Length: 556
Ligand code: PEP
Ligand code: MG
Image 1 (tube, rainbow, N blue to C red):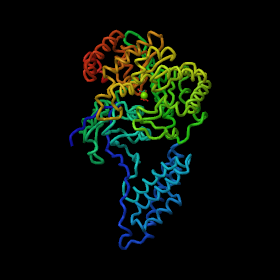
Image 2: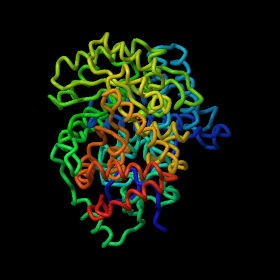
Image 3: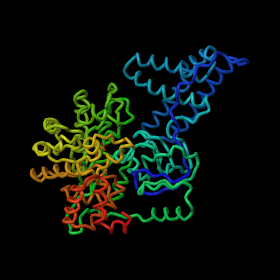
Image 4: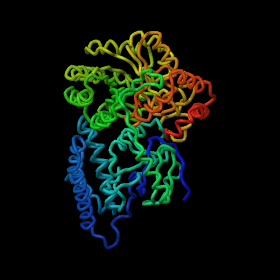
């Protein structure tokens, strides 16, 4: 099979056999009744045996999991052998003639019963569906749904990857990811970068690869080489070894300071940010602490999570972003009805309209955590669109005793109003992932639109410039925390447009630092002019890179 080209979304190379993400379990067909010669008792026994095997498998996985993951797996293991669920399925099997269908129907009724009870029990309906799928897969001889459970290194192939699935991948075994859909600004891509897992997205044809085919995934070039020869494998391994380090002080060739900070999600991964000598945290995505929570986290739970990040950076700046739930990061505890267009719905700062207590509790928790640690804590709201929203957020932060409130600029309206927004907000951080999505009207997860969801788009760069200029006029710091900052050439452009700090996945910091050390501030300004004047993203990238031949030599 020919090599496959997609878009590299997480740098680095890795080699391994491919494993496909199992497809969703669909409703098993109705049987014609009890098959000839089949005894209802024997079919019922198959149900009991399958649910027992699912329980054993979930229990084994729980044994090696930690924290919330462990508790969730233990609860699911118990659910798999729930006497009502299994008993109901056994009763139905003689009429339906299919153990898988009997489990499906019994689980449907069980889940509906829980939903009608409301509250906590209603939330468990989703767990019933998960357990149902596992038992049906077991009975049908299909692989269990979800992330494959492998002990040997492999390359995961999927149509698309949800953020929660990306978060569950173990980088020790899943050495690379290739998806047929998705794009560079998707949250799954961000998570993969944060664990240093090489990844290629929007790679058409990848779903046709046979299981266990060996591939070389190049997340920098955006290619998947099928059955690489030994020389290619050796070259890839050498590239992996050319690792850079960062001295902890970002600056251009002529010494202009550009603070290089880390984007952090799961507090458990803060060690990478510390190890790369990041100059603090420029974006702490707090929603990632609570993605799998069915109940709103208590203030105490939040304080504990936030302290882990603040405590890792004593004396340095940590920018805590309030919950950015919604769209592709649904927060289970917000209990929102489905939206037709969630990216344009209740997301980010808009959560406060329906769930004011969630916002109030979070600000209280951040404030308490800040008082117990020595980090310099800044707080910002995501998805701010209007001057009023910015002022309201600042007022709430004041009430909570948070001294440096700011906003993210990721909606074009906010960029256009940046001068007024920055009258109240003390700083702004530009989220180029969403700013690109909303400027180009292109879903950041749509692999087909990856050419549009490219932060090199000159229209996006103009909004970045407008925001930076507003910051200079109001003497408010403006930085960039979208993934654009992780691209070494684009980082130089952003500095030229006026960004005072860049925050990115920590693994990207050493490369971006090395790139900035090669260009003066004046050159950055010249590169920025070239990019803004280009007719499109591709031409902007080409024009800038043509001025930086040294980047190619450095492997940047
Ligand atoms: C962004 O939109 O650029 C950003 C940093 O926020 P997130 O990727 O979490 O939406
Ligand atoms: Mg965003």
